[in-house]
Image (cartoon, rainbow, N blue to C red; front, side, top):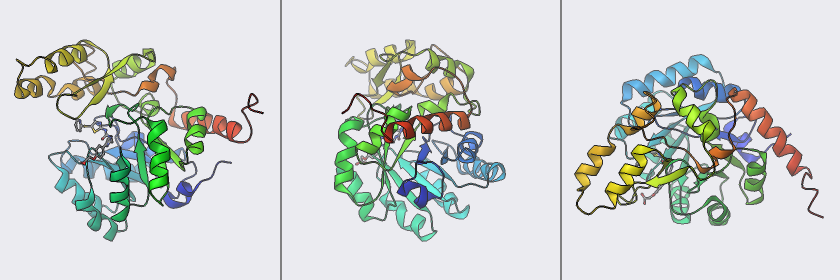
Length: 315
Ligand code: TUI
């Protein structure tokens, strides 16, 4: 049986976290992952406090296991949501797209375990100094907003930089990826794209179908000009956006306007042309829709086989 310090820290069976996917990770997906022995996570994304509170309460009604809330620090509602997780006594908060230090004292004071996503050793050290229980080192293979470094270089350097457990993210969707993450020094993994196609995931079916059909080279990064690159599946929207951002005649305002609402169009409306389908580079490996429990069980069985000597070509 696979057991790491992350299992003890979070009170979960498998050292697997579900990524906080904006417009996708709701209470039903989070509860399904937590009931399957991982840590399910509700994405607060750009939503207002009422929606986040409702989702937290719904998840509590669907699982007795711990779950978390991902707070996207660039959200216009971040202050309100930061307070709601305290009021609702959420077990775990993960953060993304920025520096969470400003909120950490309040969260830690409420007994919340804080696990920021970091994309550099500098940010990892800073959040650990401020009390982070663990960090998620997320490589640029991930979907959504990404940093510059890949998982294979980021994870071991973050492991060397901090003395808390490290969770690897970016490009992991099977037992080989998890075993590799362990070999790099990680104590757990976070997977987003793999859970996007879970049966319990309420994202539009067109989104799931696009991920299931995607090949290894089917993602690209948009938003490079803004300094906030976002990995998405290639489609009409992504190509047009990329063309616009490298056109100096297009203003930042026009670009922002063009991108507004595109993630909602993908996740809720399934708009194959104008939607922004955030997705990791590992999508090419994801072949079928399964329950969260089937995903976790099969991936952990493969992990166990590898870490207990399953590389017969290595003598
Ligand atoms: O946050 C994510 N993934 C996301 S957020 C999102 S919505 C959004 N879209 C565009 C811009 C901003 C947000 C869609 N997908 N993953 C976690 C993550 N965090 N990846 C990278 C980082 C990160 C980057 C810089 C964390 C900290 C950081 O610190 C920089 C600083 O000094 O503030």
